[in-house]
Length: 379
Image (cartoon, rainbow, N blue to C red):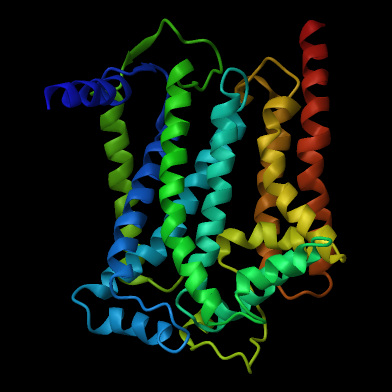
């Protein structure tokens, strides 16, 4: 037993207590820890909800109502889990944009960034199939629309869709498949998160100045653990506000109507955290082109370590890049707004322009800006 305890305690000590942390990092670095807390909350509440949920098209909607009405504190579990997904994405998106601002994708943290993008992709998959499980109107029709997109893949698309459905439409077999995957994927996210942390701690955390801070470091405990706990407290207050006062604000009202394959909702939209990618999908009039654009919008993030062209990491010393960074953030907000709008003019045109800017930012502006800034510095 002693032999087992020593490596475990040594690992905890090296990564959570004595881990050398740059002395100048601030609260923007809290969001990695907060995302881990959100993941733990989602896994725990998901396990307890699964004890009462029935993955059957005739019983799924009723089982959710049973959880809400008959299970002791079932309403709290359900609201924590449903709102927890939104909190998780809020925290991860802030974590992502902080990385973009301070150049966290640059060497030597390339693979830390790539693993982070893989985690984001797994989160999107998990959240999508989880949205199907309550078996409301938006669950059924959202699943139908998104899974149908796979049919755009040449040769094998229709076969993949049939396998996902387990038949000829989104039905009972689909719900069973999605329930199994939704239970499995969070544990894959947890494993990827541990890998993310291990790779990060090999070279150490970055800092707001984007410089090598191998000298000015202090132990994580107690200095930064206290900062993390304060961030966790503030997140808990925000989380509790939604759970107790506005538990349905971030969801769609149509999902409180039981799924009916004979009635199509007037406007099919995904959850708010998918809206920017959904807007990019809709901006391409060709089905396969839209799918490629949507997937590329996530994949291009993983290419960032090889796209950037400057040794200066932090935006604090890149005024031109800083301007484009904030316009990119505005572009993402616009895409989110367009994703929730009807597919009609002028929303189609605005979505297309915002989608073009999204890809131009990564594939054109970032490589060119690095060269321009280096030229200006050399002069």
